[in-house]
Image (cartoon, rainbow, N blue to C red):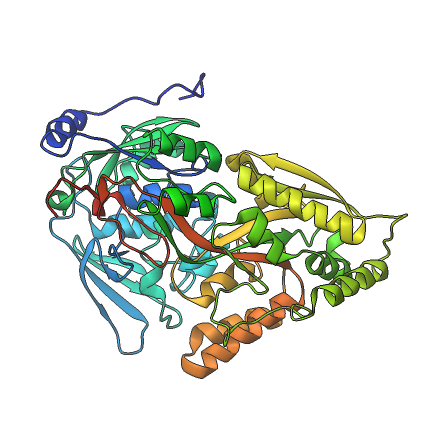
Length: 530
């Protein structure tokens, strides 16, 4: 159904809405107000890509596996599982009390459908590569009519067969792409099944309303298997693309938990909000991506290296971001004794600048014939500040003329994926799970998330070796792959993120999480008993 007014709520609650209203009455009546960054690209588990969508999906759905409040991997919709000695067969026993928000049972067939849907080329799932270890997955993704190694043995027992062993496969099954969906809703509504009243998940909450570019409201799911442990009746996620405005709303009491902090305000926040400030290292990296299909960039390694060397990362994290970020000279966040960095990262600033100017000249550019380039990013104050700083550094060091172009998140995602208009673009990676391989695989040949178009058979071989081995051999393969990627200057690492939030003094249950995941079911109002 078309939407004439973007600010109009999507409505259409089914009959179970009355049950929801009766259910939430005994719970804490106060709504949890959460900042959530940009408008989610979609709430389709198999198609979702952005962090803002994934945060909400973890409230709405539960996969076979899941993270607990501290980040430990535990069974979710599955009650138990067995792995064969050769690591190629996984059998899951589903919980008998697993229910969707409409009361219908969660069955093994739902997972068979979801995994097949994720690997259907027509779905265009950005994270489909996460399921490639499954037998037949690569062929299915190419559109071949082969049987996928996923079988419902009976309503509560599921078998998944892998082509090669993967030590991280259980972790992958906790991601949104592997969450169950109701086939009947998709058959009836098609892409419109993600609207309120149609999107029926098996998680702690159910989608109640969606006001585009404003809020997404959730209500507690009375049929959730852990419903008695859910303390907060309703959650409202707010679109907060402007970190400064988000902070003002927190100050005004309109938000209980922010998505981030305003750039450059850390000292002030420590002075005035010390008891509400939450900062921790994040397993994540901010980078600028190159579109290697663009002639200027794809054909000139010297130019890509020059642009990277001309950026002073220490200045960026001290004066531009200023919220506990760490300068990045490699892709994967790591301790100093493991860090892999690009060539020239260890040069003194003056020598680095001199090297950048030399490479810029070798690429055929000069003060009289400067490079003209576009830097594209999704709309936010933090991204604009960083873009202006990078453009100024390029101009001062090399004479580069940079056009800054911002787009709303949904538009930016499509533009970046199409790889037709982009030259240099804002990139970033929050790990799906704590494994270095998760940072590298998006740059493999043919990966749907490989927006740069980087392709190197030797890099792909290193990844395959890392996936199939353990211990020192795996570490060696990971190092080799990252070094190869950095030496190609397929991207410009800028900094490693910090997880940073402001928390209402009334909100309890927040636990540090290595991936900065904080499902609403683990939170509660402080006056409520733990």
